[in-house]
Every structure is written in C-alpha cells, then in structure tokens.
Length: 283
Image (tube, rainbow, N blue to C red; front, side, top):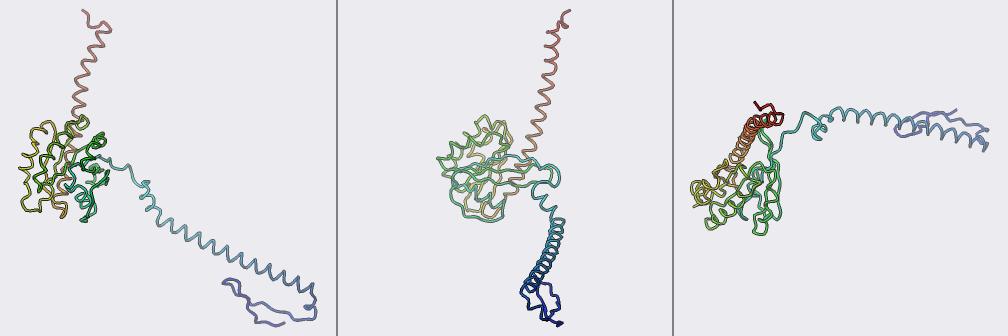
C-alpha cells in the first residue's frame, strides 16, 4: 500500500490509499474500482453543494432580516396610511417659467427647459400633518390653452405664474386668468399668483401685478395671494407653496363649516315636511 496521493474535489482534499497488487490488473476489478471512485467523488461533490446551499440560504435569511423593513417601507406596507394628496394645477402663459420654478422647488436645480407640450407632474411634500401636493404643470402655449379645462376637476388650488418682467404680455395673462376663474369647476378654489422673474431689472412689483390682472374684482369670492419669486434662484418659491398649503387648509375648513350649516338648515325643514305628511301639524 502506498499513501500520499491527494484527490481534489472542489475545495475538499482527501488523502486516499492506493493499493498495488496483481489483482488490480484485472479489467473487471479495475472497472469496479473506477465506479466506486466515481460514486465517492459524486458523494463528496453533493455534500459540498449542500453545505454551499445552506451557507447561501443563511446569508439570504440574514439579508432579508436586515433589509426587510426597508423594502416594506418602500412598498408602502410600513406604517399607517399615506398623507392625503391635494391636486394643484399650475397655469400661465408660455415662457412664464412654470417648469423652471417647479424643478427648482423639487430638485433645487436650475434646469434649462423647452416649451412644455402636454404637462409635467411632480409631488411635493409639506409639513407632517399637511396634505402632499401633486402639482400639474400644464403647457401654456396658445394651442394648449383650450385643454386646460380638462385639469380643473378635483383641483384644490390654482397656481398662476406670471412673467412680471414682460409687461407687454400682462394683458394677455389677465384675459387667460379671468377665463380660467370663470369655470364652474374652480368656483371658490384658492388662487396663488407667482410673480416670476423678479431678479430681472424693471420687473413689475406685486402691487402692479394685482392692478394689471384686476385681481381684487375677479377674486372677490375666493382666497388669493400674490407671491414675488424667482425660478432661477428659488427665492420666494417655498413661501409661495406654503401659502398654497395654508389656503388649502382654510378652504377645507370652510367647506366643513358650509356643510354643517347646510345640514342645520335642512334638518328643521325635513322635520316640518315629515310632520305635515303624517298630519301631525294639523290642529
């Protein structure tokens, strides 16, 4: 018997004895020995695979235990209900800077944009108890304005962006704004005017914008506010959208009060009509 030959099976090394005798030269015995060696080799490989599978399973289990809560949170299964989202439609003439200020507010980056064909939509987070804002930035080109009305249904507030430097188009902006506010779907919906491009010399101040847009007359039955801002630098954008969230809260509270008052007014009438039908009101 001779020892010292190493058989490598994957990562397992075994010192196997090798017998040398005249019987080893028998072909049948040699074939049988070969089969036994192959079976032993398969057993070693199978054992190695089982150990690797168990190791992989343990690692996967540890990974799931570590990252499980993160996946649950990202898929919306962690925590309670999502905060309510308020739909905001952002309108204005082409070139007023709507997309620029939206991306500045969302990503804090000054983005060079092209005229919007269709719309952009972004979700903005507010304070913990306030509703999130889903802002629909609709293209302001002449051919796109007839389609603005398709975004009015369910709108919580209107943001109208004005290029306060280009006084030549303020009259055009006034006409379009008045057409928007006449829509029945926007009755009593709050309005925030963003007087954009205040960084340019000679830009109209908020008082001039109020006068040129005739806001005091057209907004007599709704809450409104004018915020000077600059989409390029971001000055005034957060204040403007904080005011949007504030006016949304006021509008919701007023709606609740109106509903309660309506119920109080209808309840006595309903009782009176019921008593008349039952003949209880006759003397």
